[in-house]
Length: 264
Length: 264
Image 1 (cartoon, chains in turn cyan, red):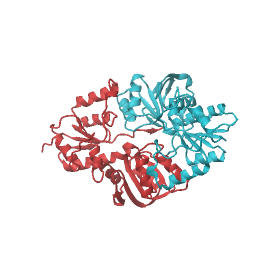
Image 2: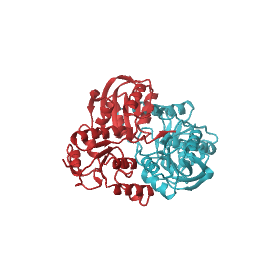
Image 3: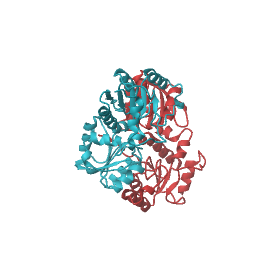
Image 4: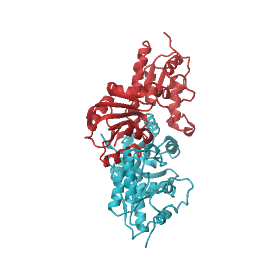
């Protein structure tokens, strides 16, 4: 069965319906091209593009943009040699690039969050999904036990922690991506009486400093920061599984990058 | 000589002149109170407030806000027990809290950046100061050597690195605080032909992913991420030194917090 790129895109946006305002557009390639293979990834790095090419895939579905800008502003990159080379590699490859960000976050539940929860083997512990967070009640475990659990389940070498490693936690708030800001997290901490929040990325002197003050006050609060990519990669892996089921005749690969930061 | 809180504030803003729009206001306390002692800090944590009290200081000059919000929005913290306790501790202490953010960044050169460069012993290597960054030409050193240098000079246990540890660097861009975004850093990388950027904090899939692609292309680029607090604390330490010279009869203390994150 021949499948066009536009067909795949339509299937991805169907659960939400077309959005008027979205960054989720076809950035490269043509909608009517027949799909030879699909790669999903958090970030369309040049390595991911070359890997797609090597595997004969002509559609990359990536959560973030290729050029380091949420709104695809590339004016500030004019004549930048790294940008120019990457753009030329993408154009020469003939690979189509679709960004899948806003739609996936609007799945019910949020597809990125669902992927994260599934990778953590916590699907059965979900108490409630909110638009930008999920609340889980897990069997009681220490922060340090949970650190080991998330590192093992997500295959990541480290996380960043605020609070006491021995604190026992059962009520957890989970926020994938850049949702770690105070306005998102602090009301959740209070309303849901959370012991622990786990998020991807957020401003460093907002939620982390709140948790520092909470610990100083003797309150039972802790924070685990996964990293932006680390928190959203599982959602793109889950997407590859779903596309494999949907299009059994098309090779689908999830490509995981190495951790963006090494600790020095 | 009796010095009022307002006198200290006037001396802090004098090099810039009064700004119409600024977050730098007196958040607690009265301008006409006589200053008994001054504490400077990056963040007015509850620990810092208690330390100020213990040392008999009645003025805290802090770079960031007490309640986890750049614009002092506290509506979302209504009835939050951690916020309420911290606010009550501050009010009961009688300590005045002045935020010193916008003015200090508008010093020429930026006072926060100057503190960072001074702590790194790199004052003699400054090539040029821009409004939000400084360019330095240092004697050639590897990324890994520079990692050790900044950890030692700033007394911090780790940094986060993108790129190859063996890369030799001499042209460095330095950006204190939350200035690590692509729009700030990428044009600087290209225009100044930088080998390495060192910044405090920035969005994880902007500059870091650019450096990842650059390395993949074989370009000589690397990135060291200090942490927001780690990059701005030296500026608040420098401020304490300046206030000590300015008011020799008033005890002035710089209070450094522990690193906000531990690696788990």
